[in-house]
Length: 121
Figure (cartoon, rainbow, N blue to C red):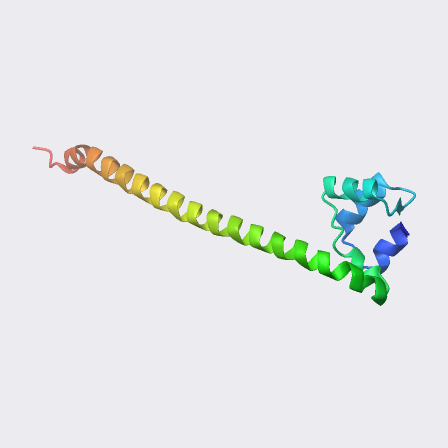
């Protein structure tokens, strides 16, 4: 099978992805391991390709696809949970430092403020 500009357009490929694909494969792309690995390196999605499979071939593909997707989902969920904890910890640290800086700043301006408001005698 060959992936072509027309095939991408028929399958509503986004413009930026299509431009990357056409720049790399101006004459289209034969469906080979090497080319698919190149797509991954270019951050081009390949997960839409199964929709081109006839139903009998899709059944063969479905089990390993579902296993890989489940692994991806667990990995991404774990990474997101770690990100959320990291953000919360970073935010708490920022808030504490900011509050301490505000107290220091406000304390530092008390005397100059009082001096500026002192009645001239």
